[in-house]
Length: 115
Image (cartoon, rainbow, N blue to C red):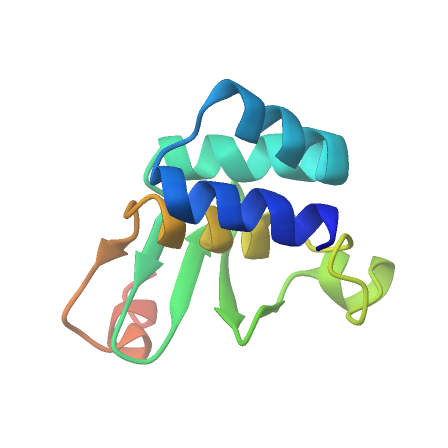
């Protein structure tokens, strides 16, 4: 198992962020991991009928199949390397495993019109 698979599995089993799991996330993902944990604790991971969205500080980012619409994911990261994920995608990974996704029974495209 890789380091990424290790913390994901541990988090799935525990169902909550514990000190060792947080340490593992930070060890693999550094600042991106920290920002992801903060987003989850601030309930900024939203699931709509069509997309999962992470609310950032300046915009909202769509996460689909582990990919993200942010510039970091587009320009800086190797999509084939699981240790290189933007903090938005990491936040979704974490939120799903700790049941912290905020579900909305509506289409994101409808919500986006109001933003």
